[in-house]
Image (cartoon, helix red, strand yellow):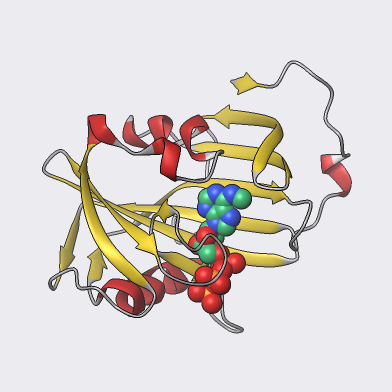
Length: 172
Ligand SMILES: CNc1ncnc2c1ncn2[C@@H]1O[C@H](COP(=O)(O)OP(=O)(O)OP(=O)(O)O)[C@@H](O)[C@H]1O
């Protein structure tokens, strides 16, 4: 477990997410498929495809749908690998379900929302990504499950804690 060496600025036992969202990472042939996000929260950053869960939708359905909408591809056999709890200072707090898939159907295509970018696993552009990503993407690449809690101050991580080996229900 990796964490900040200072006390948390908030009581996580009382924390509730306002927004429920997902991220999907396709990892294939030693590369990871990321996007340049063109609009919405995190516009200009590199991230995985993803977005808010619609009413009546499961997190898994959302991760598949957002990947279809943003890149015009269908992830095959996605599995939940992690959960991220973001206490934000300037936007509503987010609970994000993270999925990994090792195959997909279709051709990754630029849309209004996103431009596809493949990166070698050793060349992930952390400096262009959300500042929490460097604390959990390496676990994801090692196929380890995780629960990450992050308190943000503006766009920077002010406090964090990442727990490994967390179990998730199989549909999750
Ligand atoms: C704070 N640190 C963060 N680190 C890594 N990823 C983060 C993140 N904060 C948000 N994300 C993800 O970015 C996507 C867009 O967020 P989201 O609120 O859905 O905005 P967006 O306007 O794009 O939504 P819609 O596409 O309209 O659903 C969504 O997958 C969400 O999990």
